Length: 201
Image (cartoon, rainbow, N blue to C red; front, side, top):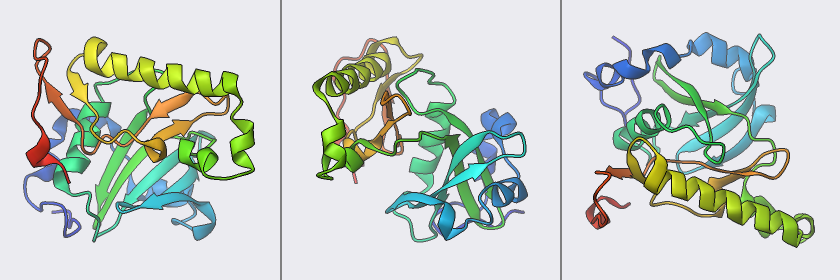
């Protein structure tokens, strides 16, 4: 049986993700794509671990989130990210391509969003100058479209619960994509109020 990181369960976890079987990647494929998670390929990081740029054999560029064994993003968050993003499809949401659970590794594979996150621009004096008013308006509209989809138009009403500048990625045309659904919760489509405080971290 696959040995999993300490923060992930060891018995039923992969069984719970049967619906995403077709999106599983081989560890060897992701190691080759990221040059064995080379520091030169690192493009981001946080409490969950590090994110690496990768290039698959077919030339597609990807981003690989590698969970740390000591990550605060544990079983619930990892599963939520996979289960939600396999169902949610919108131009203003980051696209999950797949995942890998093997040899103690817990990896999430996304489309590569080339312009990093919104905070990278907001809190850098030089990069902030690139955020002209038309671009800012474009970003605001894109975020609003993504939230409208999550709340009203998605297959399952979804509350993100962690929307902030680091979790808004920007593509090559500065279009925003909402990311990091580890804390997201779903509710019935007719439900207008949801109490989630006890689940927040």
